[in-house]
Amino acid sequence: MRLLKYTVKRLLFLAPVMLGVLVVTFIVARILPADPIYLLVPADADKITVDAVRRELGLDKPVYAQFIGYLKGVVRGDLGTSIHTGNPVTADIRHRFPATLELTLLGLALCVFVSIPLGVFAAVRRDGLVDHVARIVSLVGVSLPSFWLALLLVYLLFFKLGWAPPPLGRGPVGFSPPTITGMYSVDTLLAGDWQGFLVVLRYLALPVISLALINMAPLTRLTRSSMIEALGSEYVRFALAAGIPKRTIYFRLALKNALLPPITLLGIIVGFLLGGAVIIETIFAWPGLGLWAVNAAMQSDYAPVQAFALLAAGVKVIVYLLTDLVYFAIDPRIRY
Image (cartoon, rainbow, N blue to C red; front, side):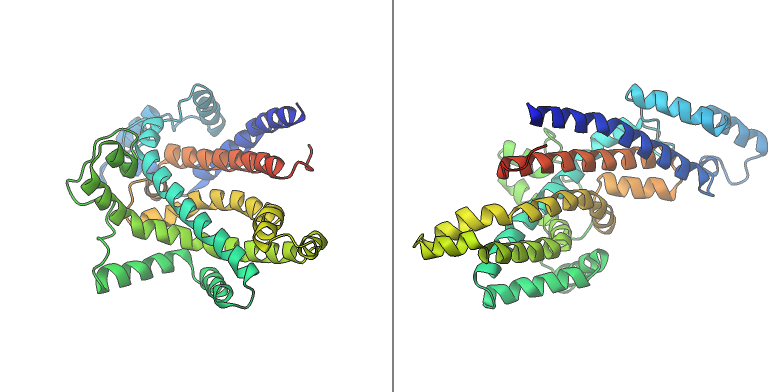
């Protein structure tokens, strides 16, 4: 019951957070020096034409009136219309969200399935080969900027070795798997198209690896240090003295407590994945929400930029809530 009350309180807290994000993004979009009207009219358009387009888009109204209109639209589920595409923003999000979801989920899965085992075994085999590999991975991940790492992979694996496909989207020109979920890897599997599935994996490989590598370093380092601390605790020493098998001590006693800090970091990483996807999607011409938001920002297209910021903030708040619930499930001593 206490957990349910806590969950309800956190969900109610979501509303003022979203309102704050909405206000900030709206103000920031309006104070930008660029005027989107001049992206829609010819270069030699006269003032009458410019004013007519401005009135049509509602940009001639005072800022507070524009904000109230935008707020009413958000409450109705209307996030506005993209000036560039001419589509409702919600339609563009539905169209592009599966590509970003597929990329971030696979990037997160790769990051977790490599970093946590690597950090655990580095702690168990301290100063051994695995520990040295973990330190190198952490050092490389912390030292290199994400965009530089992605460009380096493209240069080596595409331009030099020819092992990877060109960084130009989700598949070769004309590749169009059946649309079921919008995630190509899932759709080709559901359709039993194994050849198409392999094509999808080839195009996913570099973006997913680039996205995962960015976040592997901090997760590996934290898992290693947390596991070392757990292995040095009194209850582990007592269990060793009692003759309990080491495998049981490592993976049932120490790991359970050592996972709490990495889970906290994992919640933060999920938030960063959406931001990191902006860079990765731009480099790989990946037609997801990140590339869509970048193009909108460059064209001063207000509605998509505001919607992306709102979506990113909502995802982070929900992920933080889920992190707290996982905390509760792993450690019953935690109460709210």
